[in-house]
Image 1: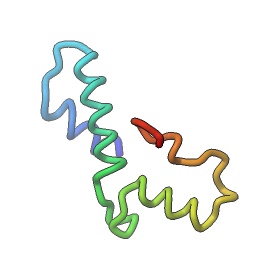
Image 2: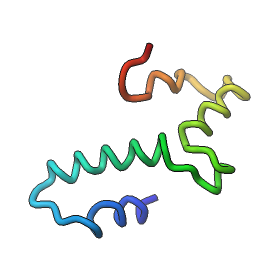
Image 3: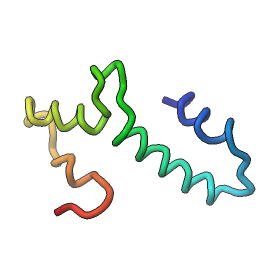
Image 4: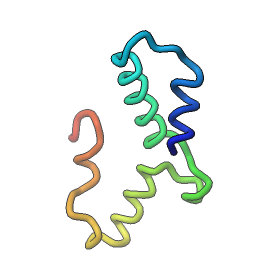
Length: 74
């Protein structure tokens, strides 16, 4: 994961200060968690995998993962 983040940010772009880097990291993490399908998770995104596990084994979770999702929770 660290290599993936590094390759998507500091190895591709030059940042004058930390603010643009922070913004880019937030966007990159959202894309990774909600859009990138991973072979190790059988083609699911990390978000889809967490929701699937929560449906199968709800006792493992204290919080509903939908409340951790950015944006409106309606």
